[in-house]
Length: 154
Image 1: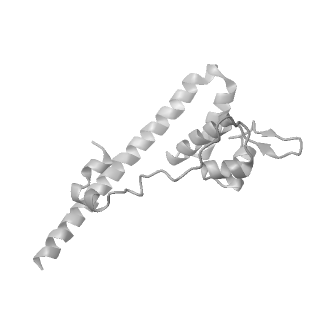
Image 2 (image 1 turned 120 degrees about the horizontal axis):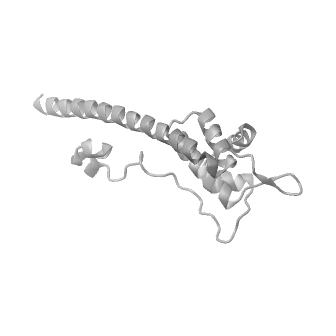
């Protein structure tokens, strides 16, 4: 059962586009290009330039190349990494754990088990939050149903 399955079908019919679950519009990556400026990465990811610099400072993005003038040059690999980091952030994973995960990735394949444990713990946390949200949604559905019923009888 998914979260959306607890929502009455009539609600979905009256609101065909679920803006909460829709992904924000992103700029497509140009074919054949593998070097991007910070402003291009901002457009691709939706992250701010400040956040990208901060990720670099704290060790989440320590391998960003620089041009001969010192400007950051992000690669497709960097964009893929930022996509993962963004997903980890959405899980509620603490930044310290994200940095630890990045360190483990850089340390190589000998850290697979530790990475797996870190991601499994995050998964358990996400499943717990989903269960809480399902309970909350059920309460909202009951209240909405109550008000819909009471509103038609008065």
